[in-house]
Length: 372
Image (cartoon, rainbow, N blue to C red; front, side, top):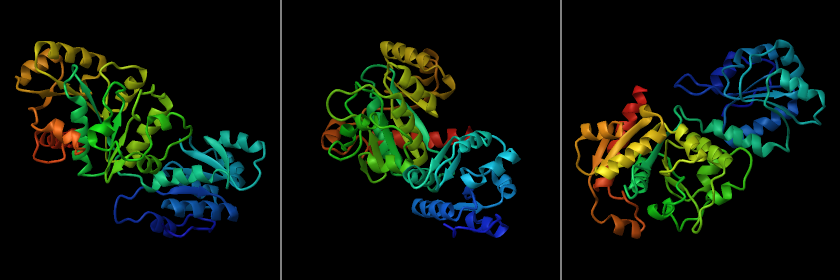
């Protein structure tokens, strides 16, 4: 991080220090204040979060960066001056203060389009997480891949876990379990003995979840993490917890794989809406194809739906019957149950059928993502 600037103007030199021209680095967060205590406090938090920070004490200078900065922190001391300038409305504007917040500050916060008014150091934890997410910002958010069975026993959970294992060989990956009737993804991946947060704990929390908090909290083996239920009866997913988990997962990972239930309730439908692509695992029998066609119809977005056929079948016939294109076919993998029972997961060896299929799907997903 570049040194905190306490000068009254956001100079070109400061801009160069904060956002080097050597690569497509993201814009730094913008702090607008002349308050030395606020400069010191936010600077300390930004340093702890590993997040770049640009500062200015001149509202006219701040206006030039107002729309470009990923996050704007407006000091209470300059809220009135910024309100007079009428900055364009945007998300992620927060008014911050190190002193007692006067009542008229809320009116000024509304005038500049701020989401809230926060006092430091009481809100230091929240602001640190906000800045941490910026420090971890990726050029491209994680791709989110949903996997659902076209019929019972199609092997969607196994494929989701295989995708997670192979994706983790390429970068940070989270496998998310939204199928309460499933076996538990930590069990399939061999992570059931690892400590970490499960859905029951997330469902009892409130507030924003940072990418780092989620990544560090879930059961994990190096670059592979899993979010699922603890042993026993699976509780109903809390919509707020699911939204926060998916948002944090996209910010903190390269790939997110979601194991979806075949019967989509309101929460699962919302999860599907966040998926870049949904893979439907199809068994190429008459009942299997008929069931898969119903699942695809419920998904409701043919442009984001692809089929993975488990077995040998004519892709043209499958597409015409089910109503979605075939992305891959795969055979059965010998020794699969033994590998899972031993805690190795379904795709520990890159030579297995599932591992090769998962790697091929990830390659295709890269191509589809670049073409989008």
